[in-house]
Length: 375
Image (cartoon, rainbow, N blue to C red; front, side, top):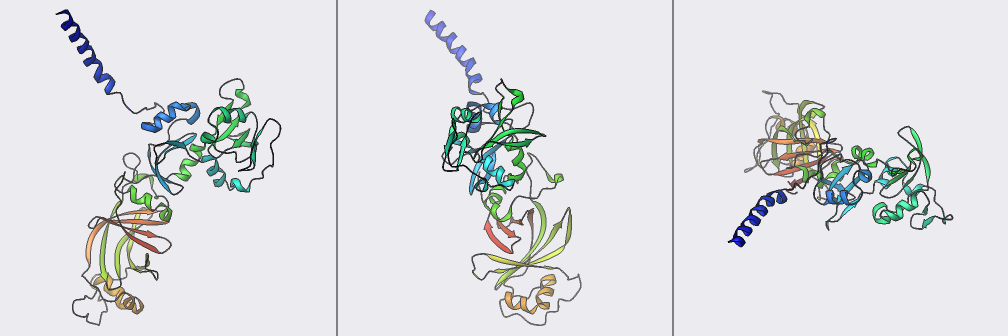
């Protein structure tokens, strides 16, 4: 009987503890900022120096395209942590990127041919590491954590004061004499805070973000007036009216474009195959037709084809080169609503009816692509 009671007491104790152990949150949050850290990035952050090494998180974990790879990343004051395809977490190459943004790619910086006494030389970049930075580099991760040196030790103006610094692929080390004798004598530069606005796009809503990432090289980042920020700083596509009509050799697309914060007049896009037929190309014309105005069409289409009407008909009839290029319409025009978002170098136009995007670049190209579904 005593054994039974003892077992029951032990079982009840474990049962009371179990919820506490199993519901420990994966997230770690901070009173100073809203983003939290979790998963592999949280583990890496905690195991490799935490706040002193990385600083506070500046963004939530999200997908970004880094050197032609789309990866989950999270920006911190002093770093960008990236989850590679194999699951390993690595630090971003922010030292190299910062020099590039400053107009001083590391390849153009004067180098040395051998190490001075007490220093370590790296022929791969032509630079050496000396004290007080060498000990930190050797004891806190070496090439894996910092990368190779990209400059010699030099003086740099940081937040109004001049400090001895050295740039590495992934870091900037700073010597702070005013903190000598403390663990903060050598600090890692706040490159994450300095680069996040340059290199990190404000994400679209999760439904459309995978497509935006896939065409980042074409479009750049979304342009985001502050009044359109919604939820988690994610941006929804703006709803716009569309009219579409397919022709024998292309299509016409009517929409109201956004000029700043206001809708501009209607625009007609002429979308036709390029000479290589790998992509489409576009031309844009103002919609000059007014309600009740004749289109100017004088020809009858062949059987099974259609004459364009309204604004499409007016443009088609008044532009002989265009009408020859397009041929006759193969269907009546169709009205629908679409999602529009302007980017640095073009715009995305989402068509819910077909679940497809037009990726329209300022370089005159168009890609008609399915919406990407992804994480």
